[in-house]
Length: 240
Length: 298
Image 1 (cartoon, each protein chain N blue to C red):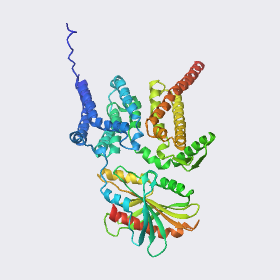
Image 2: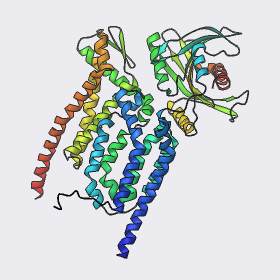
Image 3: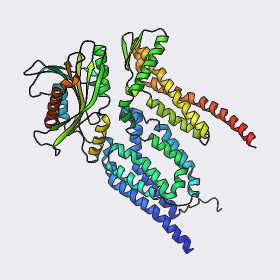
Image 4: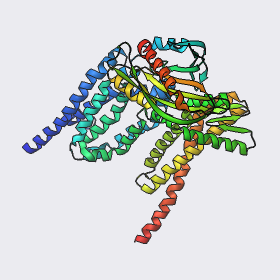
C-alpha cells in the first residue's frame, strides 16, 4: 500500500510540474491577450522607419555628386519599384537606380532578382547574365548611428547583355547595418530582431550602369562600388 | 431503484490533473488555432500561411486520432523521458517570445513534449501519426524560404506548358518563366510552382493511408506517396496550361475564376479525389502480391 502511494505521488509530481509550466505560459503569455483581445503573434512589431521608406518609394534618393534626371514607378513582379535615372554631376555617366523599399510590417523581400530578370527580359527581349560574382564591400558610417563601425555589404555583381547594350549590375538588400543578397539572410536577422521586439527594415537596390557591349565588367567595379556605398550610406543615415 | 438514480461520478486525483492539462492547453492554443483557421478561410494572413490550409482537415483528424488512442494511452506505463521536459521548456520559451513563427512552432513542440514527459518514447510512438499531422499543419516560413530557389522548376513548368499548347496548334513563345500566347503574357510565379498542391495532396494521402489501415505497409505507403507527388505535379502543370490558354484567348473572367477564385479550390479538390481510386488500386495490387508471398513462405 505504501509502495503504491509513493508511486502515485511520483506520477502526480510529473503532472504538477507540467501544470505549473502551462500555468506560467497562460498567465504571462495568454491572459493579457484574453483581456485585451490583442495577441502579440497577430502582427509583427511595427517598422519604425516606414514613413521614410514610403518617401523613398515616391521620391527616390538624392545622392551627393549625382543629379536626378527622371523617375517613374513601373510594376515589376507584383511590386511598384522606383526607377531613378541619375547622372554623375561632373561626367556623362548615366545610371538607373532601382529601389524597392519595404511597404509594410508584413512585407518581406522575396524574389526581387528574378522579378528584375523577367522585367528586363520583357523590356529588351534578351537579358543574358554573365561573370556573376558575390562582391563584398565595406561601408563606414559618416555619423555614428549604429554601434557597428563598419557595415559589410554583400552584393551581386555581374554584366548583363541585351540586344543593344551591356549593363554592369549591382544588387543587394540594404538593411540598416548590413547588405545581403538573399531573403533568407534578411529573414534570420529579422527573426532575431523580433525576439527583441524590433525589426530589420529593408530596401531592395539594383543599379544598372550602361557599358560598352560585352566589355570587361570589372573595369566598372570601382565606380559601381562607390555608387553602392553612397546609396547604402544614404539609406543607413537618413532612411532607416 | 438504485439504477434510476444518476450516478455521481467521482474523479480520481489523476483524472483531475489530466483534465487540467487538457484545459490549460485549450486555453493556450484555441486563440492561436482560430487565428490560423481564420487565415486559411479568409486568406488574410499571408500567401505563405495558405500553404498550410490543409490543416482545416488534418488538425481535426489529428484530434480524432488522439481521442481514439486514449485507452491505449492510459494503458501505457508511466515513464518520463528527459527530452520531454526539455521540449516543454523549449516550447514554453517559443510561446512566450510572442513572435508569430515561434509561437506557431511551440504548438507541436509542446505536444511532443507532453507525449515524452508522461509516457516516454512509447507515448510518442503511439501518437506519432497525429503528431506528424500537427507538425505538417503548423505554419512555418518554409515556403517563403524555398521560393527564391524554385526558378529552374518554374522554368520547367513554363516550357512544358509551352510544349503542350504548341502541340494543340497554338503560337507560343516561352522566355524564362513567361509564356506568351497571342502576345498575352502568363508568368509562372514562384507561388504557382505547385508546392501548395503538393503539400495538401501529401497530407490528404497520409489521412487516406491511415484511414484504410494501409499506413503500416511500407510498400503501399511509399508507392502511394510517390503517386501522390506525381499526380499533384501533373495536375499543377495542367492547371498552368489551362491558365495560360485562358489568358491567351482573352477569357479574363474564366482565368480569374481558376486563378484566384473558387475554381482553384474545385480544381484542387478534383485532384485530391483522384487519389482515392489510386490508393485503392495500389493497395489491392500489393495485397494480392503479399498474399502470394505469404503462401510461398508457408
